[in-house]
Length: 175
Image 1 (cartoon, rainbow, N blue to C red):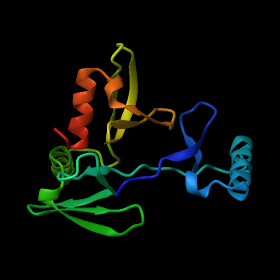
Image 2: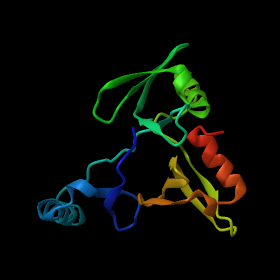
Image 3: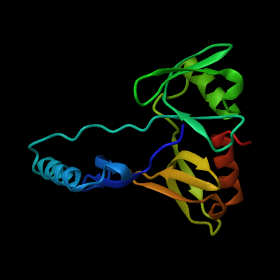
Image 4: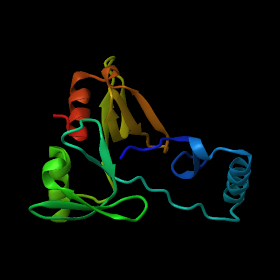
């Protein structure tokens, strides 16, 4: 459960693709040198960047703000099956999964929801400014959104409008 937010994210010049990322615990001189070398190869066209994906977050009913990470496998009357980021299959009891996550799993099992995660949507600040972003998590009053350029932004959920705050709680399963 939980996740490590990358501390360094390198994007394409048009900010449409993530070309590299380093997590806090893996930042050292060697990894930075490798990232610089890869970015140079991507820019010159000598190498194609790898695709990055962000796993779905499945909310935990009894622990608001907590989630399991993993890609959808299947859903039945009693369980939700996901594949965690390490490739391990995890069987979750239906009663432990948040309401919105269960509804999403049901749609996915019928083929009517995308399997790549939450969809990009508009979020409004308490001051009326709108941004497009994809919900990632809501923990301890901090919302984390994935921006269209691949950057991850975390800030207090209280900085959002009431409607956006309600949507964040709905997606996190803390309705």
